[in-house]
Image (cartoon, rainbow, N blue to C red; front, side):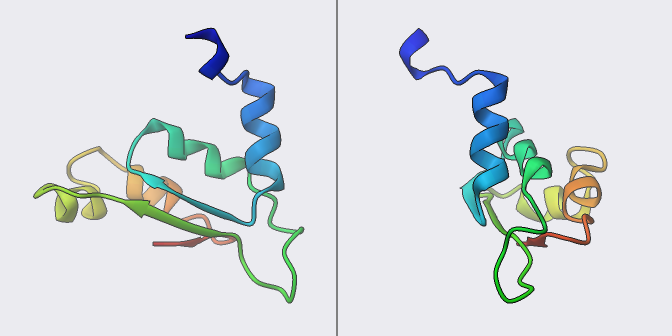
Length: 82
């Protein structure tokens, strides 16, 4: 449905202006790399809460299920990633 599709620019603008991102585990959460580490108040890091609701959760967090996903995104030092 074209009315529910965001352009790449719209996705960039949305995440760039966000101080918090909450969502299910998946490729859409990769957009957190566009969050602006300089726009938060009181020197707080942008907040990210990624929800993983399956028995695979420990494997995803260790990086063994999806390669190095956790280490790539969870390792960004300017994100408070959970």
